[in-house]
Image (cartoon, rainbow, N blue to C red; front, top):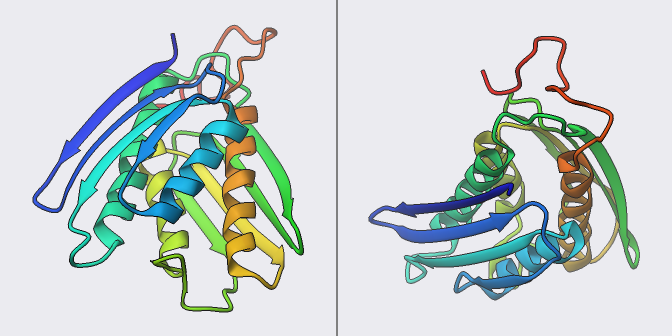
Length: 196
């Protein structure tokens, strides 16, 4: 079973995530941030990952710590569930439209964290999340998932649609990259490892 259970507790947040890479999209998500719950639901449903996320944070201050730490723990869960990354497809990309918006996410589960996020936002926030935090979510996820992640909104008007297209693209790219290739019996790397 390619599964993970990660817990993180600080003075700012308490987060628990359970992940099954080979799931069916079942999800139970509660972060205290409605729009973040909505985006994480997209990751589960469109990535076909079974995902449980329970987060409590210092929302009386703002949403920053809860969103950032959720991304970090989610990245750690993917890293743990992938293990040695034997036999995975490794690289994938996906375009996702959402009405007038179009997003692209390309991912390489290379063991090397790096991210490039290219989005122009039209408003300061979506829901109660500052739009500046969406790139931060992707960057934080990439660090702990140990992946190379490029995300771009090619065009769009509505920031809700841009964010939704980004997360749908992430879900589908992650689904494709984490799949096991029956032809491959080893790690998809000329180095022979993706974890060191």
